[in-house]
Image (cartoon, rainbow, N blue to C red; front, side, top):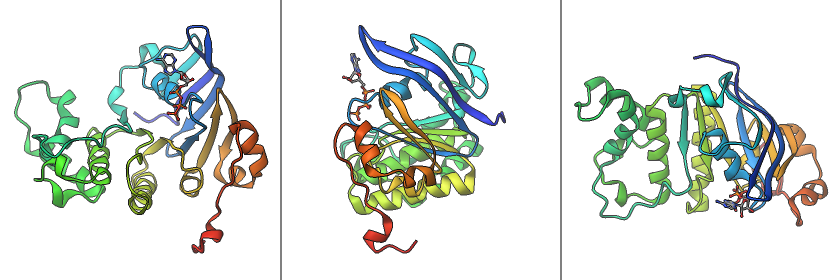
Length: 257
Ligand SMILES: Nc1ncnc2c1ncn2[C@@H]1O[C@H](COP(=O)(O)OP(=O)(O)OP(=O)(O)O)[C@@H](O)[C@H]1O
């Protein structure tokens, strides 16, 4: 299903009771783009994701996915979702890495049928993409948070999505592994052409990866290409964030451009 515009929000409003949480949100995500959605705590990021996933209905405005109005959209398999709470299995959880990834395929096979060889290969392929194929026989609960999160990306990839939506997938992952996690997302986007919508608090690191940035605090304060976001001064960002923000630039970290 090829459609250049993957997500199209037009004047979307959403309230919890009498509290306005999202106001006048308009945003377009095109095929192959990598969007970082940033904003302070409580700014409406998860609410917006839930609207895109069809879990919440906007009070007004329109949402189209792959060119189709949300109410009529049937191809949920085109969207893979990874939440911040995926990586919290305890060590005794009785499922192997391969089983977790294969469970991403069940929608297509129907219950109680055996997995075909082809599906098994798809699951292994997805694990290879996230660099976790050598863990396929291990119990999911024995892996670190970062490794579990890669497995959940593989699970989403096994369904062959065209868009990957992630809500703070690096929560609980240590800093060293966060960088390699983001570089894996970069490969997914560039080499496999998968569009990404990533909710994150990592306003420095991720904006070197994302092609586009949307800044949300109840309404969208900025949306556009990464270089324009980088050019904006920190005072402007602090203003809509509601508290002082200072971005650390790569050259300050001594990293090569
Ligand atoms: N089920 C709910 N009922 C009422 N209010 C809610 C509900 N869920 C969220 N809210 C409120 O809506 C606002 C937006 O919440 P949301 O979780 O979308 O923000 P967020 O940007 O994802 O926050 P965070 O970065 O802290 O995860 C907050 O003020 C929150 O308290």
